[in-house]
Amino acid sequence: MSHLAAFDALPAAQREAWSRLATVNAYSGAVHPLVHLHPRTGRRTLFVHLGQTGAVARWPSAPALPAPPLEAMDPAVAPSAAFGHRLLRRRSLRRLARQLEALLSSAPHRALHTYRQHDLL
Image (cartoon, rainbow, N blue to C red; front, top):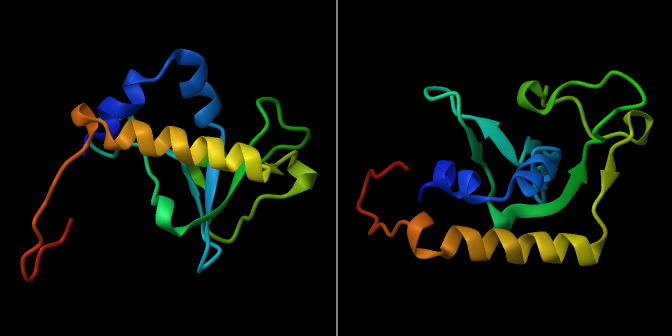
């Protein structure tokens, strides 16, 4: 699955908007930026598991208070209204999930893998 290519395929306004989103794991509460910097290439890439996303928080484009950048989020730092973070409402969350699923399941961006013992992806 080429999440690098998938992110690059988005219109510029959508790349900017999605770069200000962080997913909240439905089971652990861990917060992860939707868009990460790839450690080897330095390119932005999508990082998401739709089946475990319980909520999505939006970081403001101009935060009211200094907040940690999404690329350097400390797991102990959670979204906070004090920093201008807002959870997406149900309708927006569903729309985002549909957009992500359509993008990542399209032929240029999907990968199929038959798992074998000891595989690690």
